[in-house]
Image (cartoon, rainbow over all chains, first blue to last red):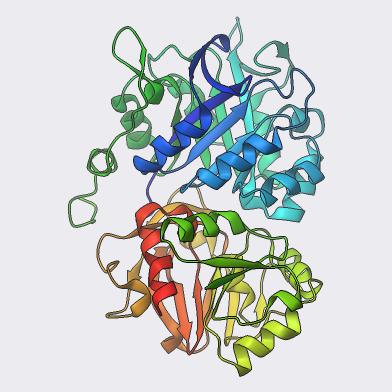
Length: 261
Length: 204
């Protein structure tokens, strides 16, 4: 049985790892290479890194760091941040990254999805949408760490991205980021019913129960979290953690013999 | 010694790292002259079929690889698109495959996939090997592997299939014909299970 994916999502800032709340106040949580080593030991399903400086500072992706992360990783890796061209994407794949996440560049030029997909195959082209609730209802896509509004409706844009050849969509809720009070289920419903490519949801997980809620409702899906896997306890002490295989099987409703209940 | 074929496609370093941990030496071949004293070969691959075939055809290694695999019978394992390239043709592209094993690469039929998400087939799935195959020693039960693909390997000779997985249909997730091996999933990104499989390949 194909299993849902539970994905730690880690933010790169100034060569370190940080965690934000509502895309603001980054708190240092550790060294990225060390985090990969720990997540290797915990046998995570997939790991995602987002460089939150690259686009804002108009920098090239940090290829040296990306290569180190890829070399260390024994699990599939997704990298996002500052990727604007087919050549950059190609270079990052060459360093051993399985999936490249595009964001602001695609919002400016959606055709980029098609160009990169033709080169590397759709399955490796991911688009991340940072989404915020509008004051009077509905949703809007933001870029540049939630600072720049685009006026684009994510539900419509998701469909367009699918048609352009995106292999996966990650939706990241700015409102829920770091709050640890659960996912925006309404947003997930709206996007999920509109597309048939794989969807990964991010923003808001405060416990494994929040992840379970998404999986119970939507089945096979990527369920990502930041704070949940780097903080422990009410005072948010930094401690990298991740559910064990048997804890995950309980969430997936798989019994000890590997069969679904 | 394991030789990793570096034709600009796929993650050579990830394989090197797995074998480093296992204390098994590897070397990288980028050109025909690197393909000497070859004991075992790994043909990795990510990306689209035609792009990967073009890269290999233009690498200068193609003739030497054909000789090593088809004449000298050097054990070779293709990974993901690397496996698919070993077949005759693919629904994904126009170029001919390597024709090392009699197979076609077909697109999954989306109408048979029950869940809302259809393609790619992405994530961790079960792999059920046939009994007592040396590639799957220690992986007979409970082994799950990471997949990322939209096309599957269809053997024209069903005896070539050594493991099945389910995604809408049951398909060959691992194949073997004489010295030629292929796996659809990514062992280099499949934690302990992948490491075990790569260890098994090294011991063949």
